[in-house]
Amino acid sequence: MQLNSVALLKIYMRTIMGSKNKKRVVLPSRPEPPSVEQIVEDINRAFPNDPVFSILESGIQDVNTGSSGGEVEHRYQQSRRYLELNDRLQEARGQLVRQREELRAVGDNLQRSVEEVKGRAL
Image 1: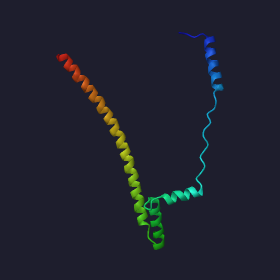
Image 2: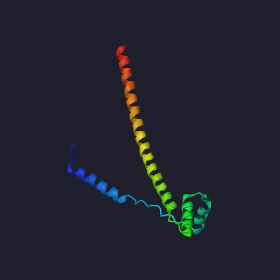
Image 3: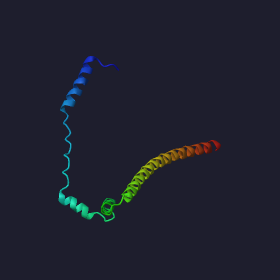
Image 4: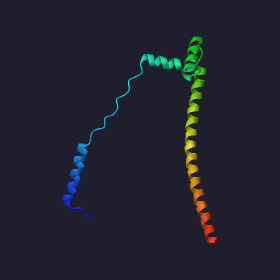
């Protein structure tokens, strides 16, 4: 079906007019930063074994004792290994999901093939 130039012009005008009449989306404003009281409350609610506090504590001890920072470096490397392993686990999870879907599809195809063969045999 070919459109004549008048029909094309009408479509074009509707498109232009429609886009001008659309309202702009107003994005929500950025949230306010936490107050000092909220920050203090968050710190007070944190567990004593929170990694941030344990690293800070060992860093203070290193400064006081003149230590070389070996423990801090060890914890840093531990944290990096944890993050790398976590990334690998997430990738493996995604791969397992894909493989599971593939296996389901293959199983469905196999089931259809079995039913088809049974139908031919009868």
